Length: 274
Image (cartoon, rainbow, N blue to C red; front, top):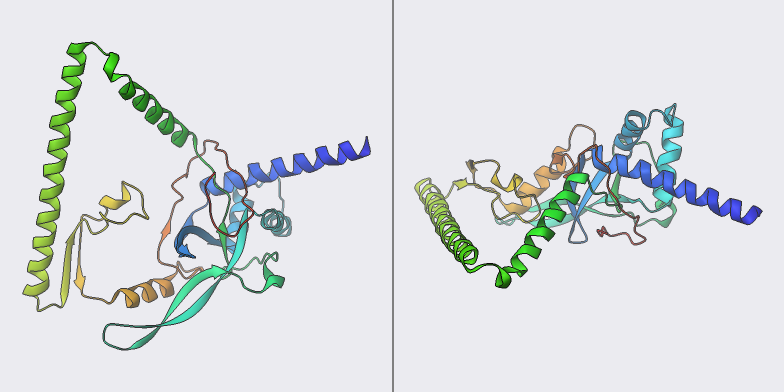
């Protein structure tokens, strides 16, 4: 009887941790950086404590309790502790520069230690999904299901659908080819017209696979002096957000929504979606 009660208590504790992690995952802004060649969302220990007090103020009353909750989440593998390591890279002009790289913390004694520190990074393993994402997935399933039943549709409807699909696909293909042709011609014109000192790109993030669809259309254009890629990454690492996180860009989690979602903590120090 006592063993069953202890198991129920443990299950309730894990359920509470999942609920807290889901709320934090959906509402807390994170930064994005590659960890072991995989995109990862990370945050600082100080930011997590601040948001625990903000989002879970009815469960924690002070900062010490927020740190205790964050420690539970860390030891339950909802996220893991990371660190910035420096590596030397050679730029195009032959100059040796130092670049920051995010990686899991190497010291095993620190892996399960949580610090309320704006300079200590942690990487999410837990993935939460908002209601909006569930609805979009349902819409995709419905559309795919309808398309698979095209052979049994009436002939008139099939003709209309085929015509719309053909004209739409050809229009999109022509627009994309025109866009890429114009952006490359404009880039080359500015690049060589400026004596190879300046870059100009229309929709500079259109080919970036690490960001969302809407974000790939922002900004509309970019113009500036030519910079080495490694040098630019190093500069981004040093910018941070004023809180000492030291990363390229701050963004609201794509899942930012007050609607609930589901996810599971992962055992390995690499982000994997459910």
